[in-house]
Image (cartoon, rainbow, N blue to C red; front, top):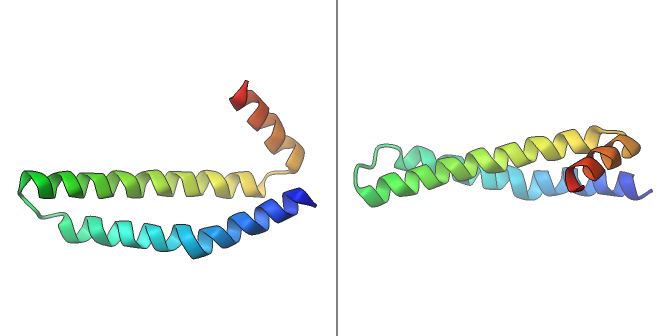
Length: 81
């Protein structure tokens, strides 16, 4: 079943790739939070925004993976039309 394969692949990629990336982004943001130079502030903001975006995308992937196949296809069709 293709949908089952998709959900397994999504879950495993999140565990191996997304969660570690979120940890690194969070660490980078945390360790640069107090920088005062323009470059340091810009780097901190970029890390914070990346962490926010990756976290948001991860939550969406989680929700899609738990949907029934037909319902997910209906939503995808609406988004892509």
